[in-house]
Amino acid sequence: MKRTPVYGLMAEFDSATALVAAAHRTREAGYKKMDAYSPFPVEGLAEAVGFHHDEVPLVVLTGGLIGCLAGYGMQYWISAISYPLNIGGKPYHSWPAFIVVTFEMTILFAGIAAVFGMLALNGLPMPNHPVFNVPRFALATKDRFFLIVFSSDPKYDAAATRQFLESLGPRSLSEVPG
Image (cartoon, rainbow, N blue to C red; front, side, top):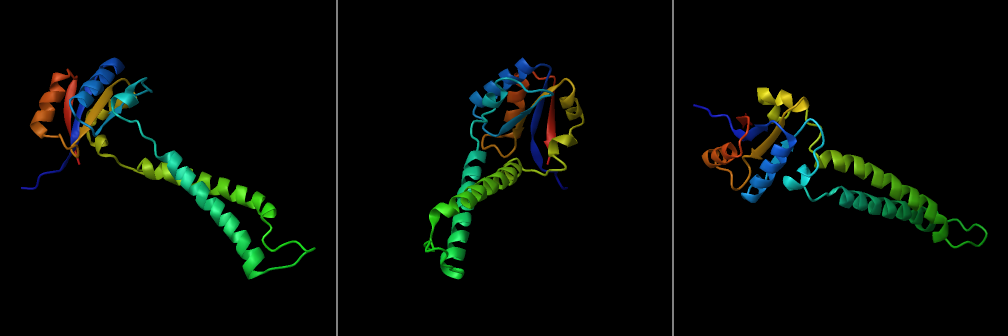
């Protein structure tokens, strides 16, 4: 008999304050891998679920540095090594002339890294997410608030996690198939 893998356990709440309180209690209980869904932005929810780090600035910095090095290196290679021209006694490696293109390449690569880094770090594109398999999740765009504890959490135990989430007083509790 084949059993469908479980993606997590999802609790439905009636209000944003109940969701934030449940997220705080879940975090305090030791669960680290969880997410929350609401029909509008909720103040303090990101901190409650433990969303503190943002890796996009590091990706943008890395892209900018690669662009800077690529722009400068390309100009150096062309001007000093591949096709050196002596124009008006100017040295082959005239770094002040390289600044504009180096700056523009830095901005270009940083922007491209920001777009693709954001998409990659968000796990996009994702045409279908496992939470869409729960019929009540359609209310997440209207007036319901959801908290999911992922089965990949080290503390996750099907029975214990269910019992803990039931103690939070949710409207309903659903198992999310993977």
